[in-house]
Image (tube, rainbow, N blue to C red; front, top):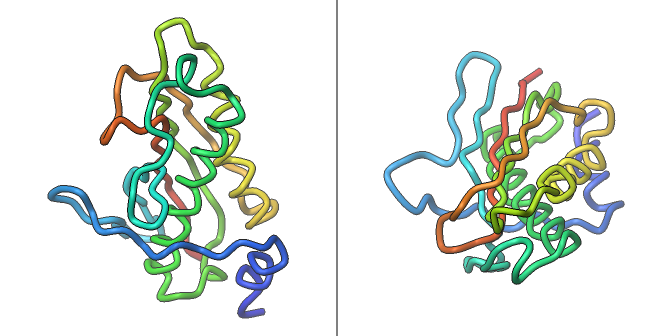
Length: 155
């Protein structure tokens, strides 16, 4: 039934942001066969980076989860464009890749990236369950705390 995902977004009180413009020489998504690869999205809100800093220093797990959730919202904005405006064309989320800008001793990357994973599952239900990586890194673009990329399958 068309509009099911849009209805779920409304039910969850989620309004997708405008899709951002790439920061360098790449496209925001690429389609290969039935797969949609969404480029890494940082925690931009209203066109500006948010959550600038490191987990374990400036931010704790809950703030990291909020940053990851913001990344996932940006992913969904690009995914919607990739689907011609109809997120019901998504068969499932295949994989999320999460990058956490953290101090060396920080080890809760999986908990941080749950902020993105939880949102994808809330929006897509069973079709949102995915494979995942959650990796700690020494820095990210614009100094943000989290970046997430994604692969989805088209129906």
